[in-house]
Image (tube, rainbow, N blue to C red):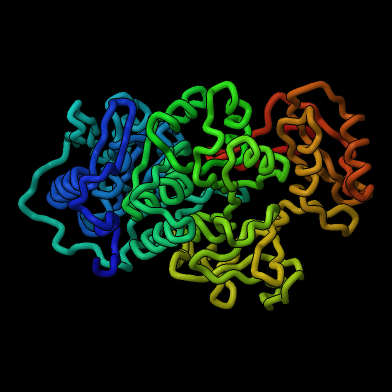
Length: 498
């Protein structure tokens, strides 16, 4: 096939009768040909809806066939898809709507919050549904004789995502057709995905991990995506076996849950071809236990919204897998720099910077943030890390989350990993608390799955960490707050637990 340049060409063979999408609610199987036909039919409807090339269309849809068809149809028609969390309340949506000014909002009839928020701003509301046959419908769309004249080109924006907001208010990240397509193809190539592979999607499609890492990469390889309406731990391994999944990608919290259920739910001990972990640090003990239980390599990856998801990943066997690292760059260049932007040699810690065809050009309507995030042509990730001599990257924490105790910079993830080695600890998060003597002091919040107290956990840390890294206070809590993709929101922990 000729070189693919836009998401309208995502599917390698639009005439293929191999499965593309399997859904459970409703129970459907669509071939690549049927999916391509649906996308083109809806794209043609959107071209005549009275919008202009490059207008934004917001979707507030749960995981499923509708989300996927609408996203690809919006992109193919020359519009910009803006997926938002369907669980947002009206007030939250109004903030996004005011910033985005969408040409229309696509939602379900049951999503009263989205309908209310769009109506309050007089944005057109288009209602999505799916028929028993698997045909995705969009009601409320005007049919005008004027149409969007231009097909999308590689440098057109296809997707507007928003940062997770772990360090500030979420920023709009416009991603071009080139950004998204190259990222999906890089991921497919790195994991050697083929039309025989089937990905079971467990993460929300309104984030890059679920959309690009688990879904578009599969479709770009000619493979199949299995999309439940939501993640269900009790159904996961049954669905994995039933539909012949070969891999899945998730955050560590979900891996932990699935590992606990693996034996009781009949997880295949040599079923997955590989398992991917991304969006948060995977504890070494959890990685070992997953590999032992499931008989498959567990590959840590590293992604960033501004980089159209994947930046780096450990490779499949027989190439060297280095646990504790996130592997090497996949289709991008990675460097480590000091505070001046000067590149550092191997084994010298600093800030991770990246460049390549999947990197955004800048934030939406935010010149100040754009200027701050690029240095000498490289995207600053605000992640601290170090590259070894082989180019494998180890992340040590967020630059702004490093705990500065009397001048000693401490990576919270290092303390997390030690606490997670304790058998009774289910979750752990270290964080800095203002301190009159040291500037900041180390504290930690811990969720237990067995019997332990703070004194026992501190003693465990003392045997494995330098004294200055041992948490002065350990809070036993019922839950540690995370965002929608499973990242710990450390900036909130001091206010909650200190």
